Image 1 (spheres, rainbow, N blue to C red):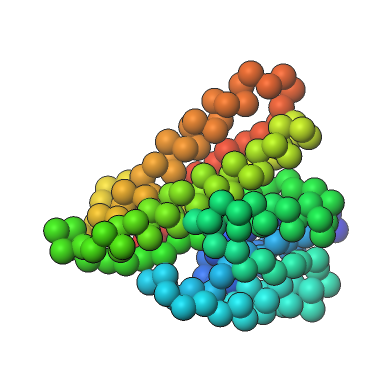
Image 2 (image 1 turned 180 degrees about the vertical axis):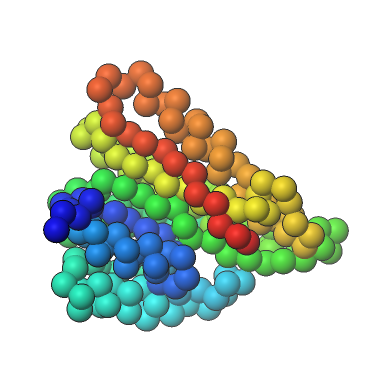
Length: 200
């Protein structure tokens, strides 16, 4: 049976749990080799447990697929770069990036700490930039690739107690448009930029 992702390599951030894990398992079942990125922090952004990413990678391998765990923090440019470098080093290429990683630190905006604001922006928005920027040279060289970014209902219409999360998620839709326009001048490029919406 043909699988739609045979031979491709996909890096998925926040893939140790939830939507990211399910995407990783699905893409692997469709034939892709997966970089399972997840530093294992709690939803609030604290702590860290590498078992989440490793367990997802192990489950893919046990099912006959190809995967490797990466524990980098997308908010850090060097660690975001390591996600893409792991894909190229371990599987020879990078074909798609799924920017799924996200944290929440909910609070009424006028009581929100500066740390809670900046940490959510760093992961949910700057992280998208960091990982996408790291993948771009490879996509340009091979004239093919896919960026998949997550927004949410909170990003599109707002939500009480989520000023930081909403502010981080709304630009994802604009980021998609910007990255799509970037490729128009690259002849014969098959580079896609898509927007996915979660329920948060």
